[in-house]
Structures are given as C-alpha cells and as structure tokens.
Length: 152
Ligand SMILES: [Zn+2]
Image 1 (cartoon, protein in one colour):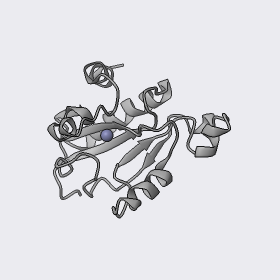
Image 2: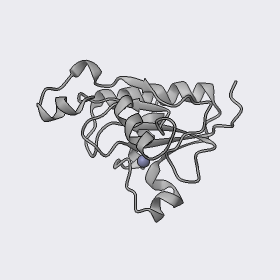
Image 3: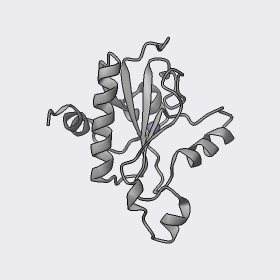
C-alpha cells in the first residue's frame, strides 16, 4: 500500500536522443538526488550513448518500460508537485516512436486502475515549469491526452 496519495500522471521527455534508467540515474545522482527522478522510463531504440553515435539502433529496447524510483516514493521530476504525482519519461527530444506511445498508453491505463488518477499532464503545463521555461515533453498535451484516453 502506498502512503502518499497519487492523483496525477506527469509526462516528460528526456530531451536527449538516447538514454535509459541507468544513464538517467547517474545524471540525477550528480544533481545530488539519491535515485533517478522518474518512476518510469520508456525507451526508444537508443538506450546507450554508443548506439546513438554508432547509428546502430537496438530495436529490442524500443517501447520497453523500465521502472525507476518506486511509485511509493515521491519522485523528483516536477518542481513543487512531486508529492501527488507519478513521473513517466519518454526517451527522446522531439521525436518518439509508435512503440513508445503504445507503451505509454498501456502504462497510463495500468496506473489509472491502480490509483485514482484525475489528471494526466505534461511537465510544461505546471506553473513551476512555465517559470523555468520548460517545454517538456515537447508533445501537444491536448493531442496526447486524447490518444491516451481513447478506448481501443
Ligand atoms: Zn520534464
């Protein structure tokens, strides 16, 4: 059972072309956090830096959902709004794969069954992100919410 009350899902992008949980965990630890800031990471075909630089995509990782920080623990992904939110990061900057969107939809559905989710937001929709000039996840949230809540 979770002690904190989760009612909002926050979508992020990594703003990098490559990456995975272990890379983000390393970066976030450098910021002084004790774990990766997100609760879930959805991979594209470039989990490792060398795959991106060598132009050798790893298709088996495309759409893979990695667990980051346990959901029972508040994340570190959206300033002043970590207490009631779950953070999901899509690896990518401005382009994301169909498999990533499929996995995101599945994950949102799963979390909606587990928690009483009342809203799905993009990072940029928070007041604190706007103050910071963030555009994350670089996806139009009106469109994305429609996609995520559309019954199949
Ligand atoms: Zn973000």
